Length: 127
Image (cartoon, rainbow, N blue to C red; front, top):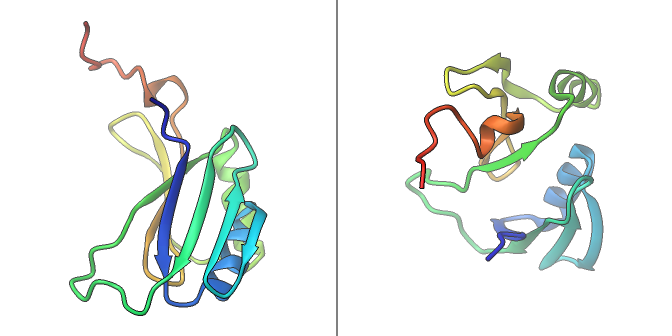
């Protein structure tokens, strides 16, 4: 099994499309105003957004992680394009470097660099 696609909800797919294109995703399916699908610039994963009439009122949202080898440069480029971050790149004690932001629907996005530590941290369970 391979996780290769995720779909998130949005109140305004057209505005969300502009936001995610600014992050660097490539639009491959355009069924606006109800649905879009992107390819990630690296790898083979796809990412979709579908129209909903409401989002959970309890504030629970989907957290989306995008990894980039050049995290600090990426954050700087996105800031120059007007993307607002809630936290700058920071080394975490789980051996990832992360920067946090939110999309227009309040879904948390974490841009990170983990390298080998994503799947092989020192505390990985051994078979």
